[in-house]
View (spheres, rainbow, N blue to C red):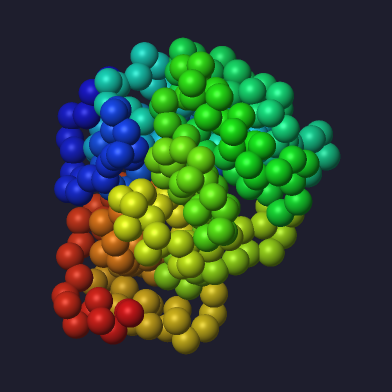
Length: 297
């Protein structure tokens, strides 16, 4: 299945400083919401979930975000069923470092042997011989040191199981450490117009604000998660005002803002609605006036 109706107009390079950079169209698509309630089990409407994945590709999306602990294994299996054999330009980015138990809890899974097991899970579920991009997801309380886990990631890369190594949920200090250890292709942190720093909870959430300048300096994409989260504060009032001007929802304007904020941001908005998918991708073509950009800043 190749793109037949590409409506996306901008790109970003993943792993630009490597010998095998990947070019992703902006925005991509995050698959987490395609699971059941609490990111657990099969989607309520499985046929529509498959249709969403296929339609995203038709409209030009070539970056999909997934993880073997979504569902768990659900989003990987949906991607495989909907899209295999994959388009030649499709980039599937996944995350490891966490796992789910039958009580739906989120747990650390960051020992070297556990990271290897997760990579093998993703390879099997996605029917791939090599994973294009794997983010090491740092949990609030780790079982091993950050350095030991990341070294295991680079070892898997050396074995050819991973093409590009990324990081997720990292602080500025951890990112600086990672850059000294090897080539970091991308970073996936919490970031959105109304949520830029940290998020509490079992999965934690380091923000993108404190590292964006470092990523831009090193030409590394920021792939924000939870970017559509909104909160009732004065910040939301500003984006709501601009959204009304362009006849967009607040969530859609957040996508537009992320695309304007930096050419190194790769938004991955997720949705369980085929109609919302098309609306989000069409909204991404919106060009903000200079005055509106300054107002939102």
